[in-house]
Length: 84
Figure 1 (tube, helix red, strand yellow):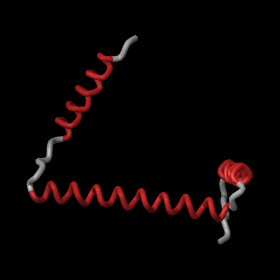
Figure 2 (cartoon, rainbow, N blue to C red):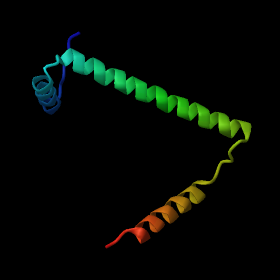
Figure 3 (cartoon, rainbow, N blue to C red):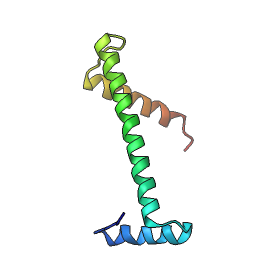
């Protein structure tokens, strides 16, 4: 496999990683792509599962306003417990 990078900063990082690990750029790229695809598959399974939950009625959708209110309440509760 040939690895062509148009970003000099990224190319420098790959060069550092290859030097530090003793692995080829090809191996690093393959590992990165495999990890990315695995993560993408996990996200897809989660989204499919959540969609199935909504479609079956196991969970009920909430409005954007309600979601925002819940997030804001959690943030406020978290901040209240933190020492200053």
